[in-house]
Length: 456
Image (cartoon, rainbow, N blue to C red; front, side):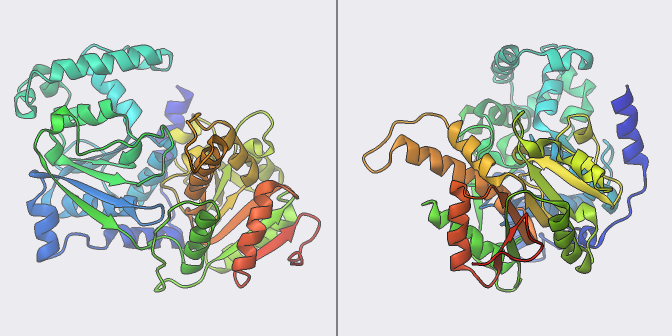
């Protein structure tokens, strides 16, 4: 009950937009649907084909979905359901739409942002295949998977148009009365959840953001142009090739980091957005370094909430309790590493946002600080699924590639400043020295023992 009241209080509190909030609002309100050819592509074909926006991290996939949602909401009175499995992103987008004063309730028009897990749990419950809300957290994973398969078998007996006459459909408008469903990070979805959406709404009423190769839940790509419910539906894939979030220097650094690990990374540098810098911190991220980083952050007109801290989990990770460290320094923090906090969003511009690396995808900050970045890399390499080595790559090389691909997610969260903190002498730290050697004009090194940049 306490968490429910806390969430309600957060949503009622008036949010004071920051300078970055206003820029994000401008990006979302920028017209995606325009008169002429583009309107014909995105509006006249909605309801007739699957639409997929595909691009690398930082290419603006989520913003493109939000622009489309806002256009359909404003111009056509559509009811939009936005689904993502990332709870931290749900909180972030709800905060953004609260600033936009866009309704999140079922009505003549609305944009509802939900986690896919909670949505499908509610769908199963509507067909009496899941327990009540109070028992949700005790729902065994095996039962969840089995009941999704059972529901798919049931839905295969009817077309979406026929389902609309079903009593379950009519009695649950908050689950089914949507004109369009937007799917974030579609490459990472399970096939059964893709097929459930197709069975409920039809693929022609789905719009997908596809992150190419950024996997969090699985290493197997979900193909949205397949599956039995997809049938012979037409599909349009819109490639997003240019960096939308990252300033040009950060995009160049991301491309170099990918190249050093043998990754394919073809996101084009956007020279219309120049600048950006990277700070590599060897040793502890101290209060003194924090003050130096945030002084530049503030001079650019940003508030603490416009930054983002990414931390690792586990008992041996010192950064997992970093929200408490910030508070000990006299700062305020929104601790997105805690499940109950992720149900709300930060309403105080003086709060620093802290999330786990696994929850950072889709988020952004003017300044992004990646704590224990080397530990994060090592953990992902250690936990990579064992794969057979090939003629050209060993299993160890594949594991390193998997870890590097994971690292590309936090590396593409920053707009202007990216801080990478590693232990002195770490293997990843040595590679970051190569990154600095290739980009000495905007990559600097700092040491915990010094408030000034470290020598080359």
